[in-house]
Image (cartoon, rainbow, N blue to C red; front, side, top):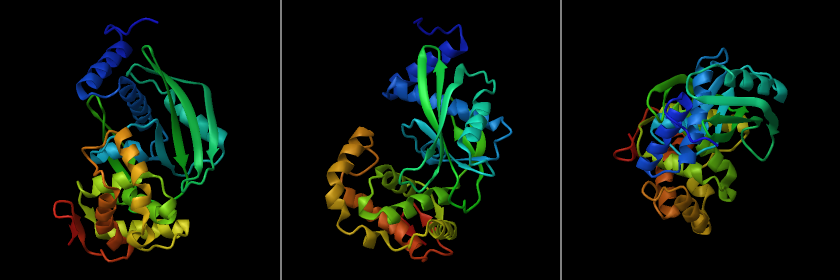
Length: 296
């Protein structure tokens, strides 16, 4: 296989990503994967379906200053057909849009399956392949039909790893947090979605949140999922000590030692301060201040 060279767009981008990976001490494969996901987002922003797919999940967190490794993109579908083959056709029509970024998407072997596992977000998963110079990449597009988006989706500016921004529809911050908080309540002490706890902790420490919006988001999501809301502190009694080992392993594997406490009990203590007043509908008219860590 030929080595990438700067004479081609794909080769230049590959080498730039390789250089960035060395500078940031991250795996090159991680950045190549993220670049492929960004390539799909770029094409979506130019497609006729740009208003039907609302960005959510791990990729969206970059809009709020949080990046993490991921192999898929999550969307909320709006006015889309429910059949998996029709969803696959829509995804492939987006992937096949020409864009001068060096990426080549291969839809010849694309597959679509229903997401049915015990999940709050049923929908369709489309698996795709892409190439960039000598790199061969695999990723998923998950399109869910579910939670009411409150506050409504709005245009967000996604920051690309090699510079520039992509404008597209995305979840508002209150919706991102609301879904994760309601999920934590519903799963209780059998929850292993460590990334949700990490996201709530990190986002609440870095961004202001409007209490009315978060409260409304939680209320609408809980009603849709038929979840009875109560304080996380009550729901998760005795949980921290039982899962400390699993938390430590996940935290180390994700290389988040500098962003997250070793003690899961300390993580939960801060999450309770942020989430429980909203769960108990006590933050109407208030704002969350990440500097002082209080509602006021």
